[in-house]
Length: 115
Image 1 (cartoon, helix red, strand yellow):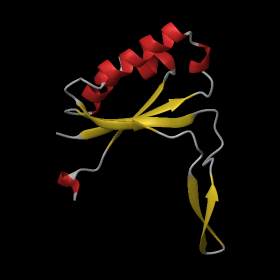
Image 2 (cartoon, helix red, strand yellow):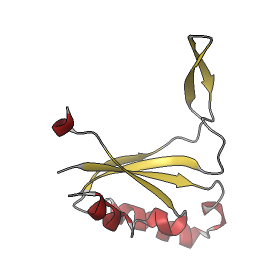
Image 3 (cartoon, one colour):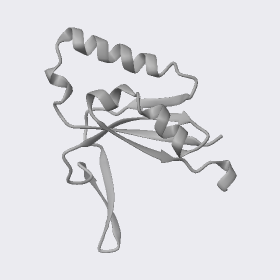
Image 4 (cartoon, one colour):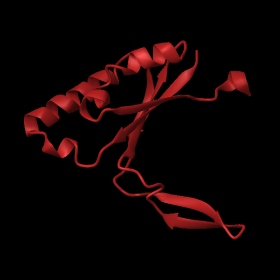
């Protein structure tokens, strides 16, 4: 069965307006979602900007992020298993990130069947 990545994008500061009780509720929703049978793994990204490698004048150059100009940042990912894109979308529709941040990108990973 194919695996799909749910790329969780967030608008900086969006969750900061939540009260402690609202933040606890959000955390509980995320933790509950990870107990679903389709869940295969995931992680929140650290609060740094990372590094980016770009080719300049034919040579690789390493620089600090950010990686692109955008109002949203990639905050983390979840890996799920689903029969197809339609099922992956259906599974992701009730992910708490949709409620709290509103942007989840779904991408199929390249598995052994394509090698």
